[in-house]
Structure formats: C-alpha cells, structure tokens
Amino acid sequence: MMAVHWYPERRHRLEDALLRCYHQALIDAGVPGYGFDALRHDYRLAVVRPAQGPGVPALRQAAGGDLVEPPRARIFLAFDDLGCEELLRA
Image (cartoon, rainbow, N blue to C red; front, side, top):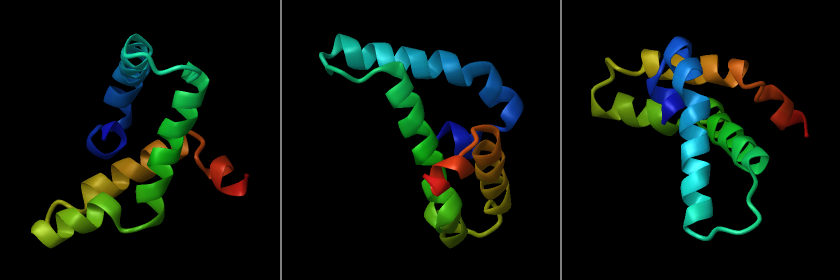
C-alpha cells in the first residue's frame, strides 16, 4: 500500500522503518526463518503485481475513474525506485 498511496519522497522517508517494524512484529509473533532481506524481496514482488496488471488502479477506476492516474503513477515510480524490473528477468 505504501507504493500505491505514497509518492517517492514520503516513501523514501518512511518505507525502511515501517518494513523493519513489520519484520520485528513478525519475529515477535513467532514467524521463524524469515529474514529482513526475504521480507524486502517479497515487498518488491508486491509492487510488481499491480504494475503488471489492473490491480488497485482498475478498482479505483471502477469506483469513479478520476483517481486512477495518481495511483498508477505512484506504482510505476515505486517499481522503478525499488528496481523491480530485475525481478521480472529472474
């Protein structure tokens, strides 16, 4: 949701801290063997999906249409910032 709702400036400022907080919550809840690098990889994969298909932008368009371009733009900005293209080549 950070990639969909936040422009890069805000995402860059908060993303790592929130991912680390989420990772710690998983560890505290007893999730074994899931390192921060694995979480970061999965986060990047979560950005690839809406960039490839209709995802959130299509849902927003169906709900009214006028809010579609900003979320799509933010997804592609995150896709580029996070180097998600390399995930498609793997």
